[in-house]
Length: 127
Image (cartoon, rainbow, N blue to C red):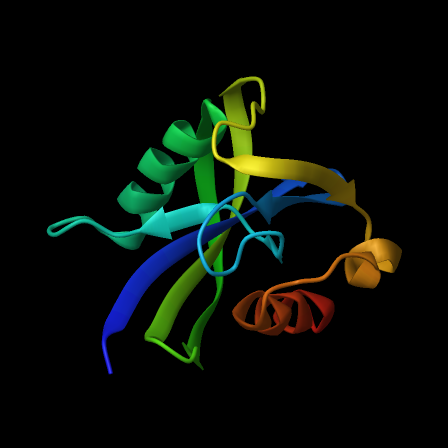
């Protein structure tokens, strides 16, 4: 089975967390933390800075690592490195996603998270 290594950013603003709705691919319509595939030679932190710039037109500061999720989707194995992030410049602009929401701790389960992202939500809840 093919393995895909990605990064995801949990963008925080006070007590709120930014969630995005996938706009393409097999998982279209599912909710996720924004991010994407790592490129050869990148650290996870470098990949996250690049991906959030490409997807949301913002510069971010990468914070603490939350977890690494290993998940088997039907067509591939996903390794997803997840970090907290905060916007340092720019305005969150959806360049690849269908929708986005700010969620507080109580409303984290109000969206239909993709399976791997559910594991990230569970890690956040335990912090």
